[in-house]
Length: 291
Image (cartoon, rainbow, N blue to C red; front, side, top):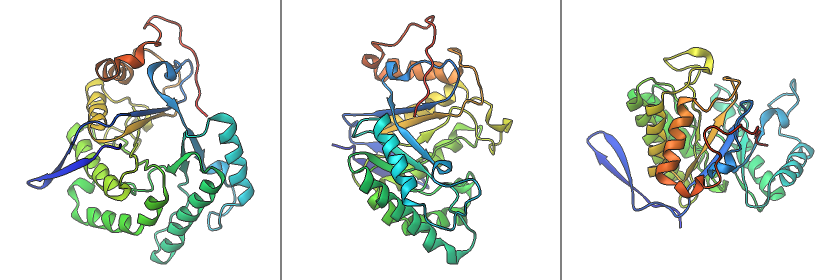
């Protein structure tokens, strides 16, 4: 049974508490560092991200629907890579416009494309990266107008959430202050729970500061150990898991990455049984690239 979330409003800040942990906490990985360990030894599962470049040619207009043969090709690759029941994320970010008249078409593309993929993969757990709930602007925590617009847009995307098997919001790090990350994360998870009903909510997290963060660094600056542990503990309490994503901007893997040390400590605290097959800290790493 999925975790039930109790929302309590204290003053003007929403705090989330849970009526007990779910039986399962799903940890997925997409790690591109050279020499990274096999994350399955640490209790993680593989999933499959269908990136936009697999669905459109580079110069193809995003103002047309995705061709059916491309969806079918991706479905075939997913079946070859992962067993039925696995998690799949569609990452399509090119459907965007500042024109109000374009928004209904965009929302319908997200809804109908998901329906088409589900027809091809009825036994997989499909959803969109950061589409439901919509991406949350980094200043939303202090800008009432942004927050109001965000809620309004999410209400218009409810049909997408109703169709999705899993909600995969994005909780990347735009602030050097952990409290600001928490404020945004609380809003996103609360909205995701409202939209999802009893469906799982499994956010994307990235152990680097986002290139648009107040830290800068073009996405190469790693999140400090304590800050990363704060994020993991928040998700353990309020989500149904997380997707650990890293595009390998810090190219060569190191066991000394602060975020990895925090992740191992998190696993040792909450899931010691998942570490039974994990190599020792001094073992030679084995490369792993998720599908």
